[in-house]
Image 1 (cartoon, one colour):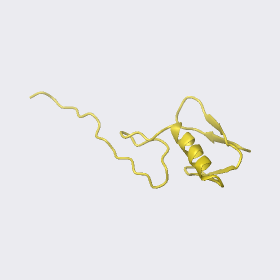
Image 2 (tube, rainbow, N blue to C red; image 1 turned 90 degrees about the vertical axis):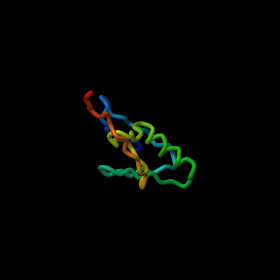
Image 3 (cartoon, rainbow, N blue to C red; image 1 turned 180 degrees about the vertical axis):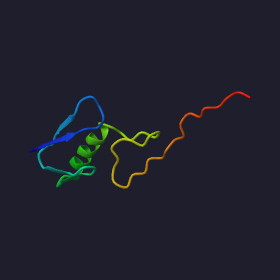
Image 4 (cartoon, rainbow, N blue to C red; image 1 turned 135 degrees about the vertical axis):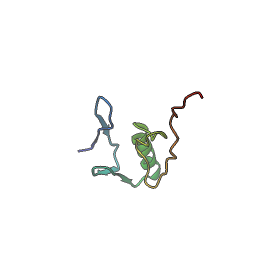
Length: 81
């Protein structure tokens, strides 16, 4: 149909209703958003990404193709000498 079913690690699944004129194709790890209106395609891709943005500590989240998320160092366990 015209719903995208996302399982992003939350306690509930997310069902995204696609607007008219937008085609979404998804396999296990890649989502492809296509359509004639370039602005609407960008808005839909941004909305899908907003459900789980990439975070810098574990690197989890939805990324655009070719996007690089810089990893940050976590807390260090250090003792007082």
